[in-house]
Amino acid sequence: MDIYRAHVLVCGGTGCSSSGSATLIDRFNEKLAEHGLEKEVKVVRTGCFGLCEAGPVVIVYPDGTFYSRVKPENVDEIVTEHLLKGRKVEHLVYVDHATREQDAEKTLDSITFYKQQHRVALRNCGVIDPENIDEYLAMDGYRALEKALTTMTREEVIDEILKSGLRGRGGGGFPTGLKWKFTYQSQADQKYVACNADEGDPGAFMDRSILEGDPHAIIEAMAIAGYAIGASQGYIYVRAEYPIAVKRLSIAIDQAREYGLLGKNIFETGFDFDLNIRLGAGAFVCGEETALMHSIEGKRGEPTPRPPFPAVKGLFAKPTMLNNVETYANVAQIILNGADWFASMGTEKSKGTKVFALGGKINNTGLVEIPMGTPLRSIIYDIGGGCPNGKKFKAVQTGGPSGGCLPESLLDTPVDYDNLIAAGSMMGSGGMIVMDEDNCMVDIARFYLDFIVDESCGKCAPCRIGTKRMLEILNRIVEGKGEEGDIEKLEELAETIKATALCGLGNTAPNPVLSTLRFFRDEYEAHIKEHRCPAHHCKALLQYVIDPAKCRGCTACARVCPAEAITGTVKNPHVIDPKKCLKCGSCMEKCRFGAISRQ
Image (cartoon, helix red, strand yellow):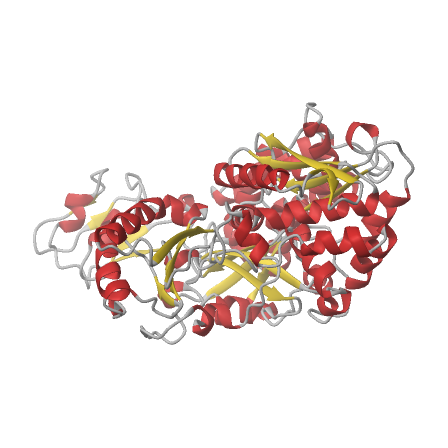
C-alpha cells in the first residue's frame, strides 16, 4: 500500500465541478510530477464538502488547511509553497463569514459553518474518493451489512430501525421501521427494495450530493433493507439530470459486485441481492412513490390511489419498500452504532439529524447537516451567515413547492417534523431557501405555483385545473390587475385542492400560497388595493423617478436608457417618461448621485 505524507482533497461535486475542479486536479497532478512529489502527495477527488459558496474547495491534509475559490493559476503556488516548502498560501485560505478573519491555521473543524453541524448522512462526503471502494471500506464500509447478515435476524434488523426513531427524509416523515415491517409482513414470492433519488424540488441537492460523495452508503443500506424484508432485487431511481451521481453510482455498484458485496451468497450467508439503476426524465411528480414505481416499470409516471400501499402491492404488483437517499444514508450507521446512539440525537419525535440545502439570499450557500430541533435562526445566521450585503431577512421557504414561507417572527422555531408543520410549513426533502427584503412574497408564491402547474401530471382535475386557476389569479396580481375578492378565491381554491387532489404532491401544492397569505397578507393587499409592490420587485407596479434636487444633469442615465425614456439638458434635472420606461433599472445603476429611485 502506498503511503503519502500529504493528501490534497479537491471537491468533485456538481457545484465545484461546474467551476472547474477537474482542471484543478489535472493541474495538481501535473505540477506534483514536475517537482517530483507524485509519490509523496496524493490528489483525491471527493464529493461535496458542503460549503458550496467557497468553491472550488481544496483541503490539504494532514494539516487541514482550507483553501477556497481556487483557480488553476493558484495551483502552482500551493504546490511550490505549501506542499514543497511547507508554507501555507494565506491569501487563498477561506475567509470565515462569521469572524471575517482569514486565518492560515483555519481548518474544517474550526470554521463557523461546520461547528454546529453533526454529520451522519454526510459523514463521508468530502472525505473519501467516492469512486474507490477501498476508501469506503476503510471508513467501516459494509461492516453494518456484515453485522446484519451474520449476527442479526431480519426481525432484529427491523426492530433496530424502529427503535432508532428514523423517519423518512423524503418529505412525509413516515417512520422508516414501520415501512420496513409492513413490507416484511407481506407474503409474496418476490419483493423489491427501491430508492427515490429523483429529488425535483427547486434548490434541493441533498440526495444528489450524497450519491456523488458516498454512493456505497446507499448500496450497503439497500442491501440491509433487502435482507430485512426478504427482497433479492433493488432499484435506484435517479434523474438523468444528475450525470455525476449516475456515473459514480454505476462505478460503485460494479465495485460492490466485484467484491462480492452484491450478487449471490453475500458474506457466504446464502443471501442474494443485486441493484439496478433506472433513469428518470426529470418529472417532479415521479417523486411520489406510486408514480416513481410506474416509471421504473416503463409506464407513464402518474400516481395511483392508495390503498393498496406499496408495502402490499408496489413494483410489478409485488411488495416494495421505498425510501429516499438521505433515509438510506443513516441505515448503516444505525446498525453499526445501535438504535440508542441515533435516538440520542434530535428531539423526542424527530430523531437524528437532517440535511438541508441552504440557498437563496444567504452568505453561506451549501449543504448542512444539523441535529433535529436546531432553531431556524441558528441555521440561517450561525451556519448560513445571514443575508448578504446587510439586507434584512424576510422569510425562509422550507419543504420546497410543498412547504411554506416562514417569517422572521418564527425564526426560533425548532427544525423538526411537527414544529415546522405547526408553523405552517413542512420539512420536505430538505430545501431551505432564504429571502430578504427585496423579495416579493406574492411573486415567490407565484414562482412555486408556476413550477407546480408545469410539473403536474394532469391526472386529477383539482391539481390540473385548480392550480392553473390559482396561477392565473397570482399572475394578475403581480401585473397590477388584481381585484377585490382575489384573496378569497385563492383561499377557496387552495383548500379545495388540498382536500381533493389525488396524491401528496397535489394535496400540498397550495402550501406556498397559503403560507404567504397567512404571514404576508399585507403584501397581497398592497398589490391589489394600492397597485404597489412593497418590495419594489414586480415590474408592472414599479416606477422609476428622478429626484430633481439630486440630479446633476450629467446625462449618464439618458445615454444608458435603451428606450430613450429620459429627457433633459446638460446640468439640468432630467425626467423619466413612465409610458416609455422599460423598468430595466439601467438608469438607477448608472446614476452616481443617488438621484434615481424605485417607487
